[in-house]
Length: 276
Image (cartoon, rainbow, N blue to C red):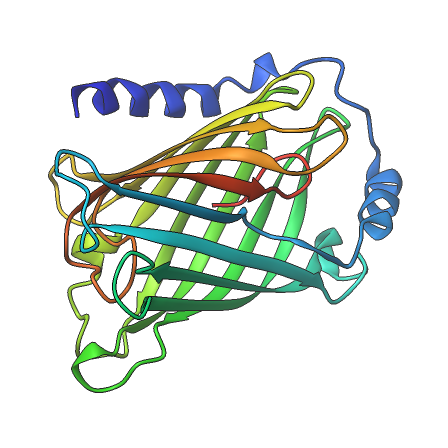
């Protein structure tokens, strides 16, 4: 946690250093920004799509504390950049699963469904496209009933800033709308805002990310995700992927249980940087 206490101010400081944006980023004007947006594919990946397996750190691996985790995440743009302020409308769908493949009958333990609809506006600074601002309406639930049901809705505000060709910073916060009596305290575990920093090497073969989610309360308490990726083949969008999760809220069913898990597998990434 002491290291996190050092990392958080550094991330915030990097957001403030607008003047350090590299000068070799392509230049745009309002018309070329609109044209660039309109040329992008309507269908794309939204978050990382991965398949990883692993176990709990600090304990002997067993069928009870080891699993496979996978995520599918897509985005569909619904309009060209013809809306006010050069925004465009899009929908997203993310599904995350926890699969107990090391137990008898291989049960699927937890499935999380996360559809959304939002508006995105590109950020232009000194005629350079350096990021985007997004307003997103999200629903997240696990599709179960009775005492195992978990669900909540969020009005999320997201910002992304490309500091240079290699580094991107992201911020996300949300207004929660909690409609399930089984997870009224979800903010204590799944948090109130998120900070993320990503690095990609010049040749786009190696990457690293740190995602910090602040849980509610005045304590210095964060859910932490550290990710490393290495592209296996030069011309393919497939990476060897390692993910470390430390904290609460990794899945909805056990949102109030602490996990410290290391998993490895492969990931397919969106173009350039990922959303978190």
